[in-house]
Image (cartoon, rainbow, N blue to C red; front, side):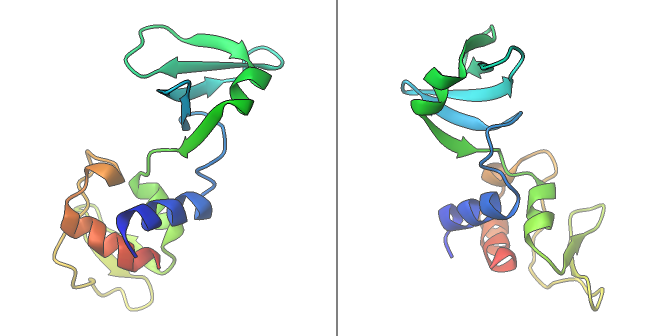
Length: 129
């Protein structure tokens, strides 16, 4: 499984493609982040590099967007990978045996999935499948 396939699989397993807080989407060629629906039938969102939240009718947005999903965090990885847990220093363990998985890497807690090392992503690919 490659990283793109892993990302899609994690999004499926954790409801990451729902248009809710934190979900990223493309709208008119710009990457945006969903904030909330503050007024009935309207959506609040933030365009990448923008300094102010925008509001638009939900029907305009929903017909012209491509949902990218939520950034994948460690919690998403753990939800998607049944039988695996992680300790406070980022080492993965088999839940049944409580033995450390010999994967030779740890999760960088300051980054989401996209910011992890290739070695860590390769391991996540194996864990999620």
